Image (spheres, rainbow, N blue to C red):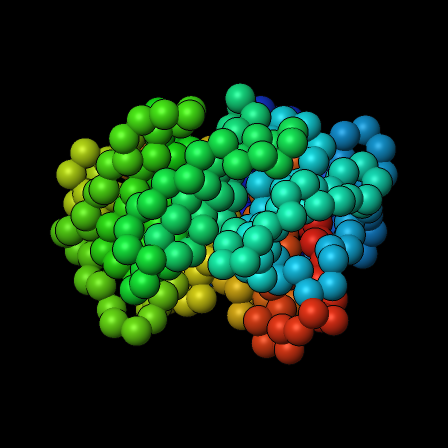
Length: 335
């Protein structure tokens, strides 16, 4: 895996409390087999090559695991326990993998006409699933049972793509319409539609809003616009979208899943087989590129979730044949 390390002030230690820097960065390099790197004078990023393994949860765990043939994965969610939940574009199935062993099984079998793309797991065990065709579903993460189905929009002309949890709602993006949808966290409540205004310009016939996370202060949402590759700060009350200024990067084209730790934002750029790492300013109006992460095992990764000192991603393999025999994997990279 080749990575360009973020600046020490923005790279969190696996404990989420200590910052890597100075001797800590050296210790991390020894523990993970990271080689010596060179500094990029333009961005301050440090480039290095990882050649060894890493540890999560106190033991050496697999850094790659299989998914069923033909599964067509796109979303991944991980909670407080070492289990990854992944959704299928083929039939809406949900697969659960034990990160300690790499072994897994089908949690929800899916069905005709169902889709599961973005996923997020809540602390109460409810799994929120973006269902593409205007639909969001809530599942019991222990049994896979469908707890609720929400019709967010018309079935056609919409692409309910990703989801994040913020405040009392699960917020879903629509890649084909200029709106976000807020589903109450829990089993009941009314869906809120939040039209996107301000700097947001909806482009026809392409995927617009995709990955979504909350801002560090929890007062707004960050949305990536896959085409032409932009980040936006969205006001939760008004839907006003302010384009985030990128420093050190021209764009985040093919931006898909987002993951944030503190003020460090990870942007998965699927067809580029790349994760761009940004440091957000205090108001999340500027994002400065501090590094990138690549890996030879990446095969169009779409979304990311974290456990311990790793990001886990699923390879959607969009550039490969999407057949019942196509193989798929999940992979882990150290952060």
